[in-house]
Image (cartoon, rainbow, N blue to C red):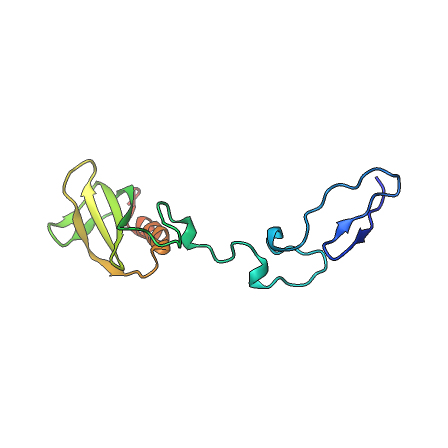
Length: 150
């Protein structure tokens, strides 16, 4: 395989010396996700999709904000001492944790696995302006409350 010569502002390779066509290259610019051949750093407008964290929210309308309440659930096993709830005190054993987001707040609730009643986790409510952060909050809550080995 021969050496390539790069020409033009979009770094399009010239044909190889042996006459074979040069492999296609990805042009620099908005579709290149910020990779450029000339070494200049892209400006934010050059990178298509930069900062689209809210667009990844399932069920989100255009603009990234969820259309209504959202929640995440996970089965957990309470550690020693269980999980303190506002309604019934401590719950222990196999539980389901639900992390809800509505009206700018996140709330943690638990239920005995496959039960109907949900209980608010004591101290498990806080302001959460960005609904895109719900997954991170849920992951942290599961990490703190799931203690299958004690």
